[in-house]
Length: 424
View 1 (spheres, rainbow, N blue to C red):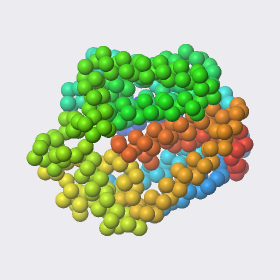
View 2: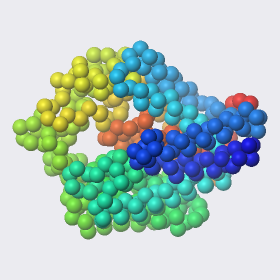
View 3: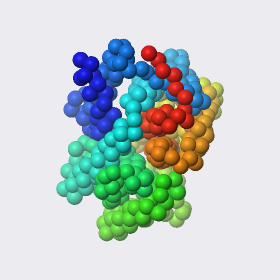
View 4: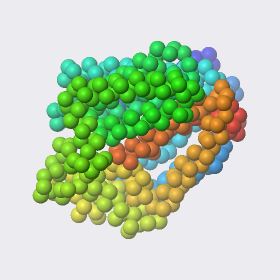
């Protein structure tokens, strides 16, 4: 039993990373496959801890204290309100920190880190190949595009989230290639394929953030020259796909126009008509959702309407913000969702967590050592996650945020720049 548990734990991290993108499996086996994997790996690790073959390491630091305080405040918020439909929010804020802690403990050496990151690149490459095939064959695995653009979402339920995943893969590939991590061909292939498929998601925010994220990775890389070369190649592929494919070219023009204020919002949302609530706004969907969030925060500035209570509140007390036709209830701006649901208390705790996390990472980034790249990569991935969450939502509930945090603290623990408590 001990040997089996050790083997499960040894390959647990690659298994978790490989199954994370397979969100469509929830339609087949009721829960996403990765949750079953997490359960098996977690039980195996718990067995090793209970039999004293391994110890539980809990990293220490201001950011850890603040994220724990945020989770505790979220649970209290839910206990006082228990808004209908808020169960998933409670599960996210309590389970994902545990997942991050598990990731920290699954990494025992540099080989584990390399294996985990290479698995991310390989899954990104496989996802890109699948996405391109689905796009050109006009087939979908899950949630076909109702607008007829055949937006690539592949194994995800939302093409915007698919674009986010590919952006993370591209950033990791640039940094792995710059650090000369083997195999180099995997880094090149994953970056090139991600650059080719991001346009096929038709994600306006993804278009803009992809360019910014890839360029941001260059100055943070171990070798600027190698990073610049692969980043340039990625941007060439990205631009070529945009120009060659007419639908993506039009979508890109709309994205640039929105940023420059030249073009009106150019999606297919029914609120675009000149007589609609959203007439003349950059994005009518997010406009009324944002206005409702501000109203909730204004009425409940200290504690908000309760964890997971945004959708129930906008359907009831704040339904006056909803349009008369085809309303959307899920807020796309995570910062405002936190303020609306948890008020100043939750907002300050989460903002403080991000600030202290940045502060704790700056010093290791400046050091030139064998662990620098392993710390930089998850830090770079967190940036587009936070930025895109302000356009598409899914911040606290984004599994790749907690995966990145777990990998970062694991690398810092191995480097010795973060202390941890070993619990027998």
